[in-house]
Image (cartoon, rainbow, N blue to C red; front, top):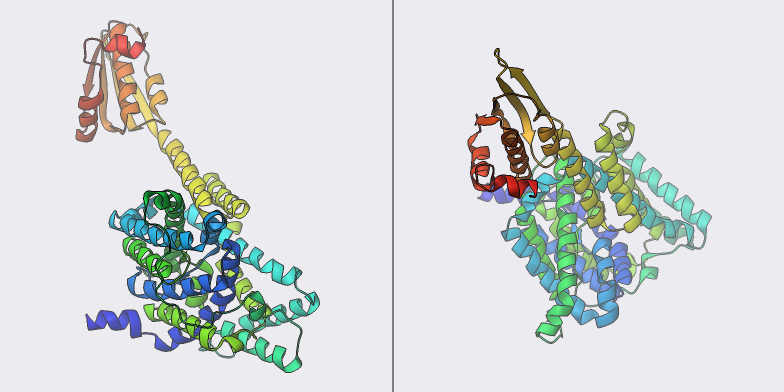
Length: 494
């Protein structure tokens, strides 16, 4: 047990500490920005980021993944805050956590098995684009644009060149320190973290949502909480999969569902908004050397220390430095090989990936993009498997009997092809259908078998089915109607 604790917490202390500092600095402006999007005070997002990061460090299923307040969740809160206020948002955040714990207990994390690699790649690319687009207002809207561009370019140069000098200190941290020092020394007129909004000046306290505990309140917060729970888990599980790939390790998806739920309950009870895993900060953490749960815990603790006790110093950091870090994240997150492999990959995979990217980028809703991607993947898969069906036949020497051999999968996609392969007008006395190499998957397939048998019998041909495997035979026994007296009338509509 001690060995397991040491592996998950103390096996990479130096790397985790340095990466946590970078992540905490990157979390501050984003948490403030997401609070503004949701229409609440900046401290709501900052307290949420602290609580969620700290709690998921203990309860989450993916070490080194960073969870905090996110833009995807903030977008879902706008209407609730505008129509009912902050207290209802806090209540919805607590209910969100309850839903996520239930989903974890129901083992819904296993549903990630149905998300194809093309959908994950599209999700990653879309997030990379959104992260980059989120930096554009700082580059194009800030005063002193040339200076901002210059400082951002310098920051990127430090990020990419410094590893050649020293590989132990995270280059994003060096970028933030150097650019802040230059801005202070030369008195550069740059937009800073302090310009984003007022940082909190006190520690968070326990705060039960001040809402009536009745059915009317539940009616108000239920749809928002359910949407927040689903989007939060979707983004968290996708991010966990990406961190799995980056670190070549595995994670417990169901535990992550429960962990996210506990974290959101904790966030709501200290005055924070709902949140989930952040791919940008998770990538920063991993690329800066973070590997264990300690990095996630320290990111949350350092964030709180910075905004409460070191707010004057943190407020001096130029946004250009953080923009450079996030551009690095965007570049590193985007799967460039997915572009070069567009001609090599099957067309269906490329279409799924591109569709996922487009839907996420244009709707700014990760759930919509992943839903479309999974739906297209399922349709392409069904179409592909449906074509893997062969039906051959041979006529007996006396011309009175015909044997059909069915090979492949029969389900809703291939049912029409199955029916169309038989010659019902052929003048034979008996038809023998060998199904030993076939599998019937659903009631549509069983219905198609009914049609074949009944059509042959209507023409006066005897039909014999042989070789049904046990699973297919079970479905036939339960749902088939071709051996019932009124089968012809029912199936043919007479």
